[in-house]
Image 1 (cartoon, rainbow, N blue to C red):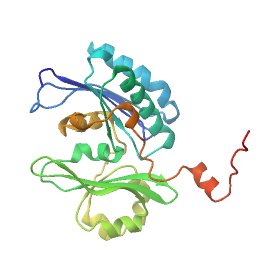
Image 2: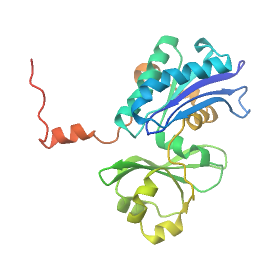
Image 3: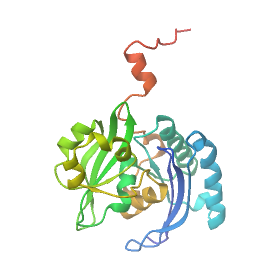
Image 4: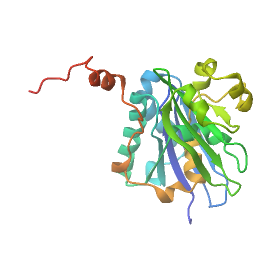
Length: 248
């Protein structure tokens, strides 16, 4: 790596939207967060994302042409929110012809707590309909991130049956569904007094750089959302509560 890597990251899968600009000067150097902005306005992600990107680049004196790559959280989460970041990053990737790293938003949520040799992290996000989006990750002593439980939508009962070893629990799913887990589950796992509720762009970008993901990226056309389950409208259509539009 002759020049520092500059990555613009975006995450809008939850009510908390965010954008971050990160730099890595050399392979073994720590990742620097040059800029990070977040907002808690679920219905205005599409309005905020361009504005905050312009702010980040101007404040840091960086042009779009200087970016080495892009990173985006692909969900699961809000169906509309996931599309905002993906469409934005895909457009930049296409126009700038630079690689895109797409990572699960559940991995971004776990990112700050993944330390070599320490307990695995269980990300739980409220998926509504009595379900949680869940995944588990661990960083090995060598620093490699491993997926212990692939992202999926499960009930609290099924999650408890799958998680037998102590984990650190993060995400907005725990405060909502805590009463559906047994006391033994709460005692066995580490529940933070102030848990991280939402995935953030700064953690997403740091993962993309620290994991060397820029060498494993795809072009804009291959970036796809990770929905896991159908939207409410699709579910209603499936069971006949909605009728498809007539052909014209």
